[in-house]
Length: 200
Image (cartoon, rainbow, N blue to C red; front, side, top):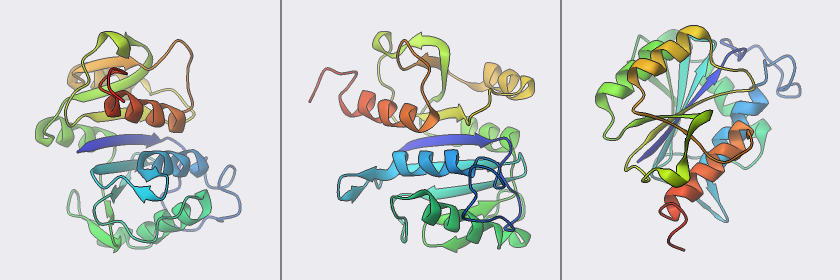
C-alpha cells in the first residue's frame, strides 16, 4: 500500500464552492485534485493499492481508497465533485470515525497533526516527507508501504514542519529541481515501480 498525504492550506471545509473556480474561490483545490489523479491513474487503469488523504484547512481529511473507488474520472472537476460530496457529509464525521460519501471516499474530522500522528503509529511503512531539501532518492532504497507527505502550492507551516521533523522517517527529494506536487507523485510512483530506476 502506498499512501499520500496532501495538505491543502487554503482548501474549503464546506461544500459551498464552485466547481468552475477551483483555482480561485475553492482555495487551490485544483492542485489537490491533480494530485489525486496522479496518485491513482494509469493508462486505462487505476492503482488499487493506493490511498490518498487530502487535509482540508487543517480541519477535515478526505480519504480516497483505490481498491474501492468508483466515479473517479481523470479531470479536476469530477474529482472536486467527490470532495464536495464528502464535505456535504462532514457533520457525521467524529474524529477518526469517518463517513463514506461515495464508494472509496471517506471524510474524517482530522487535521494534519492528528492524521500524520495516526499514520506514523499505524501504517505498515515509513513516513517519508517529499521535500526539495531532502536526500536524493537515488541514494535511498525504495521503501515498502510508504506514507508520502507533501504540501500544496504553499510550504509546510512551522508547526507542520516541526511535526514532520519528529515523526518522518526520511526526507527525500525526487530530483534536482522543485516539482509541482502532482508531478512529484508521478515521479515517486516511478521510483517505486522501477526499484529506484533499476528494473523496467
